[in-house]
Image 1 (cartoon, rainbow, N blue to C red):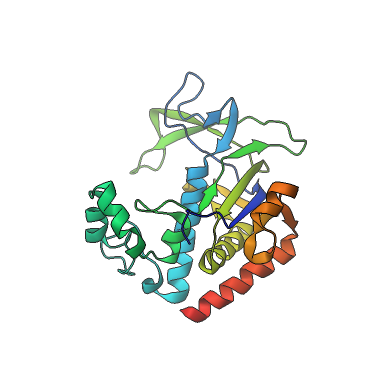
Image 2: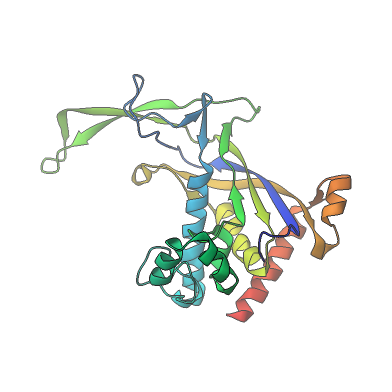
Length: 268
């Protein structure tokens, strides 16, 4: 399904819970810390691009673990399987990336993509799944701020702290929450199957950010609800314009996803 028509939109509004402390570095030292936490408008947040990248790599690994390497490609991996995927075929991808807009448009209808590239996009096609930034909030809904932790460089021979190698970094402590959303437009059965896998993994916990070897970075999906319109489910774009989104309970939504996942498994 292309982007030329708008047939459906699903918006998942969720809350991620920090099971461990988190460090999302800005990459630029400040006067306050050697490795400050990434802020937006003075608020700590998890970039949507980071969350999306973690979800994509997680889903890729799960698909290949269940079905083997032929079911999806791995972008920019020359030895990746699923060579019928235009984004995973390095030679074809490079030709299309350098082609003129007119030439690319002529070949657009011929292009095939694996399920992961269909959902998460590639350099050749936009993503059907959009992931918002996740802004940190505490239980009362007000903002929270990171704290500073100290670290030292370790001598590999003596396994003791080396002189003059002290540093610090900012961390959001365990227990913080993040509000975020996922937006899926014109999703097909394969997209719902992969979304089912992603949600289940988020419920068990995923790792984001840096310094994960220190035990940081684990977050889990604590709760969510879904709003949608979908012509296939008899709540159309016109209904959306007239009444707004329809809302579906979590249990029913996961039933839809699981059904799509089971159907997608049979096609493999």
